[in-house]
Length: 130
Image (cartoon, rainbow, N blue to C red; front, side, top):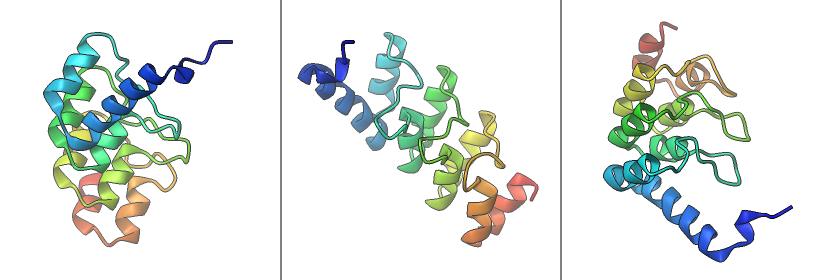
């Protein structure tokens, strides 16, 4: 079976995409998704573009990816969700964008609710109704 990640050009392209998500380059990343890159494109750790944008605090990128079909509740290979990552990083705009996009605060391990309790983020707990 052919492994596309054995192609150095594809690896470089994928690395560039994940870099765009981490740095919040919304317009460039949205253009790639609009051109056919899967909205739930995933790296070798199971982190989606959305997970990386959320973890790095880029609410506009999170919203753009959700608008293009990214799953706001998709966990990575460790069971972590974008919402739990945003809670951990204390990113209220990202938390709101994910909740608006349908993310479940109870999903994942630890869940966003668990993370908010663990770190004493009472404001997020009130948003989650917990």
